[in-house]
Length: 136
Image 1: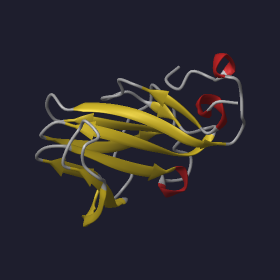
Image 2: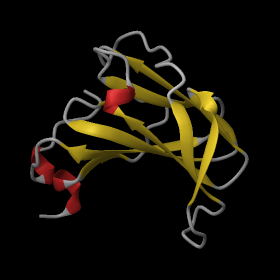
Image 3: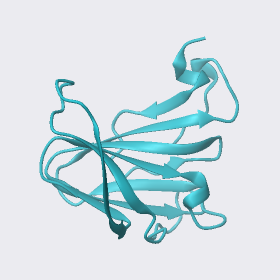
């Protein structure tokens, strides 16, 4: 079985899009562009999104967006936002780090930054055609 459906599900264009973590243990947002990316969460997809608290202390950065540089782990002061000047940053949000009852999370750029969401460590494996929609 291929990785999609066994290990992960994905939303290629996920800036400001609610992502369900009901069937996974976490999501990694891949962010590019000089921007600030803010993580929020809600009880439902159409719910009121708010800060999950200062859950982001670690990020993985890459000086390039084309695969020609290695990823590097870095830390930051606890926050619910990450700012990058260039390259790419991977932001991991564990479902267990969200407040009780919060099953939806968003990563929203303050400007024109780009975001992709990789929902991983799926709790139920399915063929890609049988995966649930992540933003429905």
